Image (cartoon, rainbow, N blue to C red):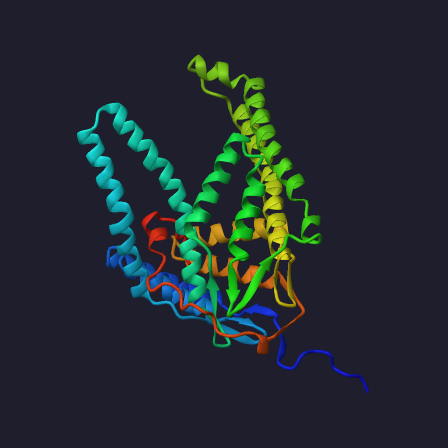
Length: 365
């Protein structure tokens, strides 16, 4: 007879999504119609409905997630963002243009332009805080703590570093921002940790980025060289029209190179997803993703075709398919002792992710 060392109340946390494409095509159809008929006003309630459906059809350890957000909260958050952020910016720009000399207006414009980039980071953090606070599992809320302004400043600073380094800091920027988010996230009163472990660092993040980065440069260099080799620059400069052979070769060169380039970009994105996932843990629970480059390519192509052939109504179903693939490729190791977890200290903000809507950063669900 063996003794079970698993703590009483501990549960395994396999993640599954049971959503069907047909139901989300229907949701996408009628929510798009209602949104158009209400001059986009219904979008707040549409997003809430979609989240509730998607959350409820996603199970962790056999228990469904619950989304408790409300459309009115999103609408009120949008109005608050317009009144406290967008309107003051517009008024400040108008006043500066009317009252200040050109040099003064330019200084105000640059200051607001830079502030705008900080506010994008703030908006992303606030949206994450709202969404986590409205996500419940087994009656326990998730929670996002930390300062949205510190996150916005960090995102702005990392963005400047990426520009100064001609993009080479971009992978480090993404990983550091993910760490800021996850290290301030909680399930109830249990912290979620992002430790960038040794196992996570085995993913070739920088090698894949180098290949994708250099691939873009090489692709355009070959494309421009091919155009020059075919004599198309001289032909167009002289008012001539390229022949069928030249056009066929140009398209073969362009599309052949794109497919190779897409693979390296997708490989880098898949590597990033795997490293980020491996870095996240909750108590004794650790995560792992099996996302690969071909998963992303297949998903991107089929989702694009779905949206095109449904005249845009399939966008919601495409987002569901992405969510379902993430769940399908996610592996969870260990068990969670629920007896150690108590309710989150905060109920979260009273209004929704208004700044994301005001800046048009919502991206759907």
